[in-house]
Length: 340
Image (cartoon, rainbow, N blue to C red):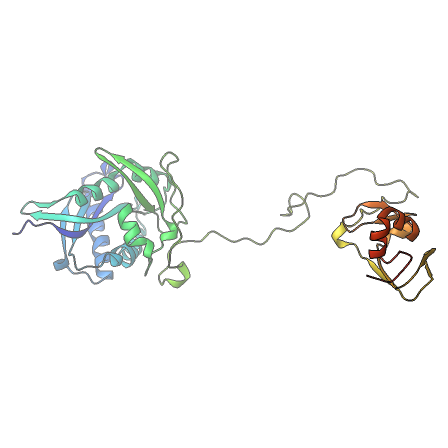
């Protein structure tokens, strides 16, 4: 038998809480566990000739043939395991709950079994304190799936059939000589309940969206109706109700409405043609075009500028005196008249 290391996908599975079971219950547990894993391989058409399986008492260790696509295992295989696990648990007083971890790397096989760092890491991820904590927090979930950081980025993040990278979350795993980041997924949950001390950021955006992938399994966050813009507490509103208290006294005029912003004001344009024309009490010589804000009439001698500031209103001769001869000629108010 060749002991040359080949790049293989390694699967490590373990039953949660098996140490509490008696002998008869443990035998039933093992029967159900093998039933579930075999259903997963049948779902993707992987026969016994395509993988090596080792018994671990309350778990299994599997190394796939290098020709088996990893995407088949992280997608349809996982879905097949989940569905069979639900069927097995129907009517069981003690539901079967599994932790499953995967990693890919060089794996050697001798007469005694499998060896290699990929095997070690898959087993560490499956049996880690982080994985156990997630299953304690998600106490009603029958299955936890963990993948190494490299497997997530190479396979899971690419998406595919039954693969939902947006429902994975990253956490650090520190077990014995292992100190690695891994990605956790609980089927049918938007995100796994990670321990606070290990949780990290959400996964990066993926190229394949969930609606584009068949066999989508995750539950999206509910999109509730847009909150009403009033109604106060108890009505889903975002604007508090008016403060209670007595209203204005009878016969009292309501407070004036605030003046609109300067950019919302309207302006009037006036044009004077010919010479010696009188307009608003001013005499103009020659053509003249002016801009007037409507509030200028109400302010009695003040003109509102385009920026909303106020300036004293001047007659044409007064303005000419302020501007000087050159400016007055440019403004069309000089003795020679005429618009420039």
